[in-house]
Image (cartoon, rainbow, N blue to C red; front, side, top):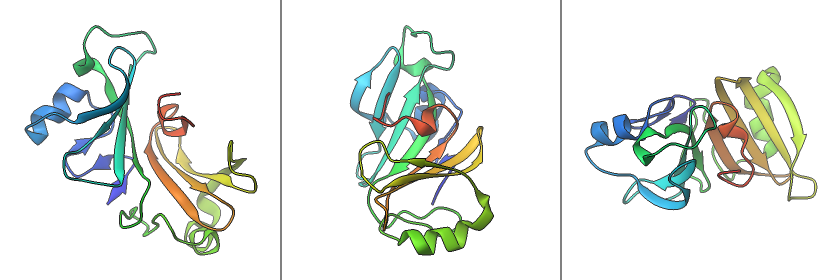
Length: 152
């Protein structure tokens, strides 16, 4: 299950050093810059990725100082605590979310798509849609949870 607090033993709001000590290994780097923002994955876990960024926006000397700010799912099978997953119809997701949707933004790249925003800035979901289905789910804190292109 993915939540704004994290996934499994990976905790949102904690440094990479603390998270990697807890899980007993390193998250693997998918892309980004180790002094400001990294896209990371868990070995043998597909369809999920994490974003760790600088807590202040200023570059850090060591990747271990980056703070995990988001967990994202880009494949079905990973549920939120309310049961939403990638591939679910927007209509069904909206029925579950109801008035917890605090903002709707037009999608930056998908015509007719939207970002459905749920929760407070420090514990938030952003559901990406293509107008008919949920295509990605992001959970974490602002501004990292709303980055459109992973580390930007």
